[in-house]
Length: 79
Image 1 (cartoon, rainbow, N blue to C red):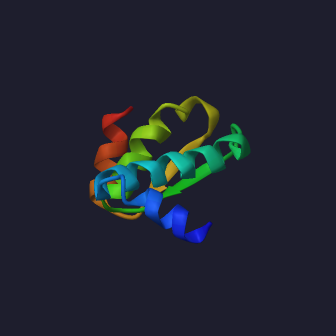
Image 2: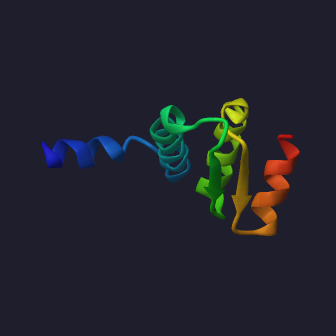
């Protein structure tokens, strides 16, 4: 089973894997978000995908904090 799971990952590019990781993170935290939630956001290409997905559920939480100016700028770009 582990061999198959690892083999299945090879069908995706590095960029697609990062996007899938960001989707999984949003799927995990999404049900836990409420109007009092503050989301911490990291930095980097995977975090960029996370920010893009987070923008789709921004109505569910109070705010977000970022670990870098780059992440803050991207979040501000989503409103």
